[in-house]
Image (tube, rainbow, N blue to C red):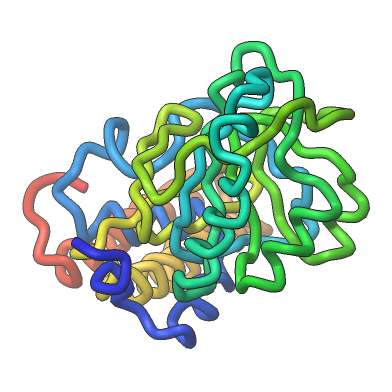
Length: 254
């Protein structure tokens, strides 16, 4: 499936998805998929959000592989960077740049810094997810370019574009060009094309379901005995489950 066909949601829908954190998006996602949540969708390894104050980011993946320790890449294809930028520029946004670092077990350089964050921001990219490093953190933040990465780094070494517009694997999760990604300080989730059209409604419903049942029951504890609190929680947990079953036509225990 092409990247353009992967783009199911309108930009206005993406803006609304950005209003929730990534765990809330997951709560909606798990109601509309038959996949194994532990096997598919979100990162399996720990990520670090270096701009948590920017909140979630939502966009479609553009992909890149780098190997900063290897100087031969720049020699073998000196035009690689501009060729890669043409790929990014010709892909509709909003975009999240997903970068697989072949040196991730021994990072010696960063693709990201003040220059690349501003360059990619101008090309409708909202941020990056990389299992490598980032640097110029304050300058990246000033550019409004969010980064989930493995760690910080001082230098760039022989960083060059090895391959792009290809499958990558970061933090234990495979990502295809054009995949929809929602990411924040908790990590990231990759949404398949067939799941995107129902995602916003499902996330909105699950958030409201929590706020209308379990959460108010738990917070309305003042002046009640332990038995009264537990009974109220039992009733609201049952109502929460029934709401989910009715909405998503699920059977069995929730």
